[in-house]
Amino acid sequence: MKDFKKYFIIPATPDEVYLALTTEITARLWTGDEASIDPVEGGEFSMWDGAIIGKFISLEPGKKIVQQWYFGEQEEPSIVTLKLHEHKKGTSLEVNHLHIPDEAFDDIAEGWTNPYMASLIEFYEED
Image (cartoon, rainbow, N blue to C red):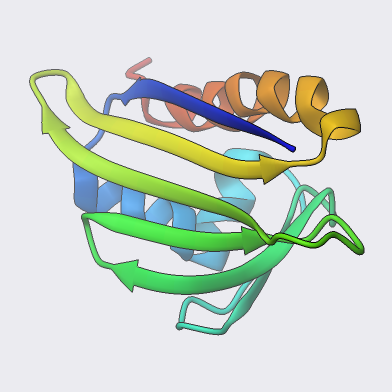
């Protein structure tokens, strides 16, 4: 198991980024794919046509999202914590993803940057 941590700057307010990550219709817009999101503690989500599935562990609007991502049978749950902080250019989004299976780590780490964050950043960039 490996852990991944990285910061991204999103050109939107923390509240806007929070809604983009927890609202089904907005997630469909910025991912360009099917998304299903039940934004309550214990609610499940699926993004990018099922490429990412899991459930919400805790939600603090505009501040923090904690999720469990499903990777099949594994001893320790794979936990994603997304912390949103105000930044002069919008939002500093801290991604902390724990317990990624070794065989999936490179794909997951690369996927956080592109397409996940690249799509979110592009969604909010001014034309």
